[in-house]
Length: 345
Image (cartoon, rainbow, N blue to C red; front, side):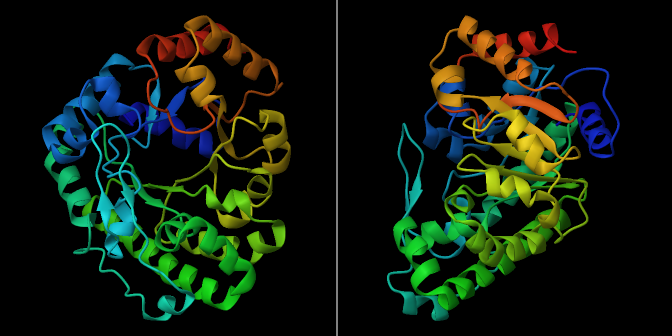
């Protein structure tokens, strides 16, 4: 985020009302490489492509906030790689990590990663260090420490079905796995802050939390997320969960979260009623079926519908219900931004 946008975001978090309605989008490798005109592997492998693609985005759309901004990542492989996961790289789609845990007994012997040396983590840091001067020259800073969430990482290491079954059938072992991953995430966030003192935000992505009931949420989710979001002193504490998010919304404050990007299947009013007035809501039109597959006119109509659905526009960053997916065209992003400008209260 550029420095002015960051100041405005922190002002919102502190309860101040902005003079405009902000828009913002989560952008990373599902969208940027194809939009920029390169393959996914070129984007991951080349620091030059990475910095130029991100600079093109911020310069083409200066009136929106790209969150978290200059995200150094390797798709879903980033965190699992530190646990030794085999990574599969593809030209035209996202990479994926293979399982490392093949039985519930493997959890007790799972190693604890060194966040300074293991997997792709050093490459994440080095890419940011190499690009930091150019980022600063463009009036931006590295603002967020970023990680996938504990249930999300567990689902990659064990397999989603197997992990979900373990929560019900082997809760002690599942808790042991989540505890190990939570320590890793806290260390990883703290190390990012150590490398980049400009970091004053935490961004965690975890869709798997949307697939558990309230009892499991209280047992397995809240304790881990409280630790993660207090692992460094942060102003912005941003959670992405675009699966079912009604339970999540109810417990944002208890987990120490003040920004929430959620599924387009939930209305702004529903999430606001559950989260309370202080949370910064990030949403909320369909990312794939409208922002990617729709026309600019359809994007405009969806934005107007979303803005008309909730009376109080305070503490909202207008966006889509998730990150920007593949194939979103520039004209659709422009239509979104212009519609918010023209319909702000």
